[in-house]
Structures are given as structure tokens and as C-alpha cells.
Image (cartoon, rainbow, N blue to C red; front, side, top):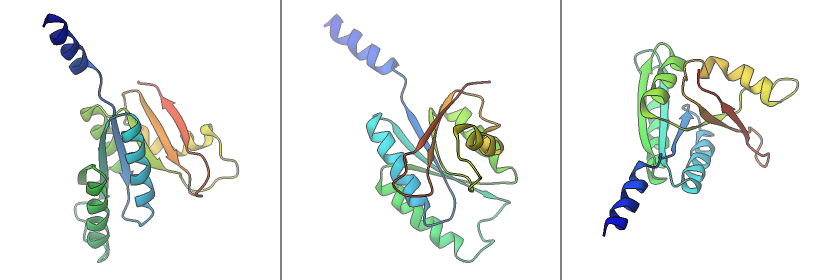
Length: 158
């Protein structure tokens, strides 16, 4: 009996993987959600989907609310918890979300193409997004071109 209680106690103290997928109001965000769901399944983790709209309204474009609703429904079907924020500083909002919720892995789309794609050039381009993340996280960069392997970068805490 004591052994069973100890085993349960140990299991409840294990760190839960929390996977965050950062999406935009674009159809290709479904690929990011799919990758986040795959990573969550592999790690027996929680899946979180986050969209941060710059400003104070999602109604800047007439198509945006419909597309976001479609993406959020898709994310919910994949088992994700959907989070939506409006903020003037998108990267700070993402960083605060990661820091406050204990996110361990962040799934992002590959930044615009540069001459040479390396972990360092991608990290340099992503600095604007990750500068407010203070906890150590794994960044999973989903490549623009299907069939290419994702890039995983370990960001150390600050």
C-alpha cells in the first residue's frame, strides 16, 4: 500500500511537457498545429495553441475572424487548448505566456528565407520573438517547404 502511494506521488511530481504552437491567421498554421499535436503525443504533453493579434481588435481584416475560428476549431479537434490575445507587443505577450504557463517546447514557423539557413541564422531572426522568454525551452522550427526536417534549437534560460 505504501509503495503504491509513493509511486503515485512520484508520478504526480514529474514535469509535464507543455507544447505551445504560435499561429497566425493563415491557412498554413494547420501544419504548425499538426506538428505541435505530434510533439504533444510523443511527449504525452499538453498542447496549447496561441494567437496574438497586434493591436486591440481582430477586426482589422474582414477574413481574419473567420479564419481564426476555423483554426481554433481545428486546434480543438487536435486536443489543443486555444488561447487568443490582443497586444501591442506580440513578442512580449508570447514570452509572458511561455514564462507564466511553464511551456517547455515552442513550435514556430520558419522565418522568411535568408541566403543560408542555419540554426544560428534562424535563431538570429527569431530573437525578436523569443527575447522575452526567460525559461529554457526547445524551439521547434517547422520548415516552409514540406518534406524538410524540422530544426530544433534549445534555448537556455536567462
